Length: 115
Image (tube, rainbow, N blue to C red; front, side):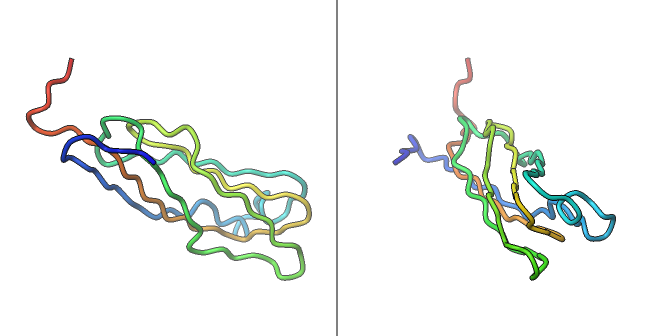
């Protein structure tokens, strides 16, 4: 469990369409084997330390004729942002994906000393 010292807890959240490959014949829709899409997400304000980031699929449009395979993660979490990564493999055909995210962590108070 992470403990946040002090009284300044910051919460940032958002939603992003990672890709819409069915529109232009992108790799998630037309490819096979291991594939990944990465997108950098910047926070509205910097956290004091790297926050805890939660990511979740909120829209997943896929071909029903193939297996549904998904690995979703937040990587490279920093005080100013993170990278959301969607992976699939095999014969999965993913048309589009939307991801919602939430970051929670300590933020700077107005009277904090920064050295």
